[in-house]
Image 1 (cartoon, rainbow, N blue to C red):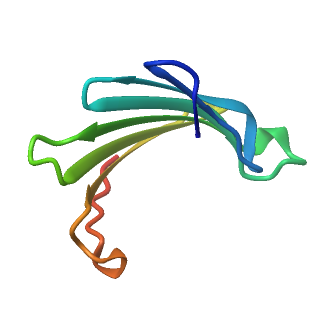
Image 2 (spheres, rainbow, N blue to C red):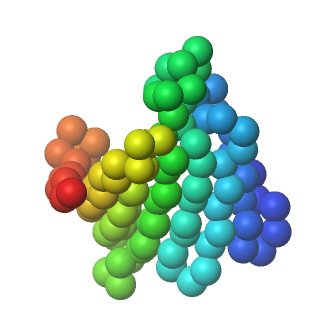
Length: 96
């Protein structure tokens, strides 16, 4: 991820179509990109939106991920990360 200015970021990845764009304000970051599950098949692309918010305790982050397929089917996933838990004890809660 590359910082462009005070509030804007960009990122590239092998499975991201084009450039991921992010905007940060206060304790929140929004990240938008198109994810290619199979680069040779455009029907497998997902529009992804992440809203990552650092919680008031300063150690927990809430990541709300919205995945939207070309069929306009939408899935919303909520994930909580605690920076003081070891990676193998990560607490993840999903919701749709």
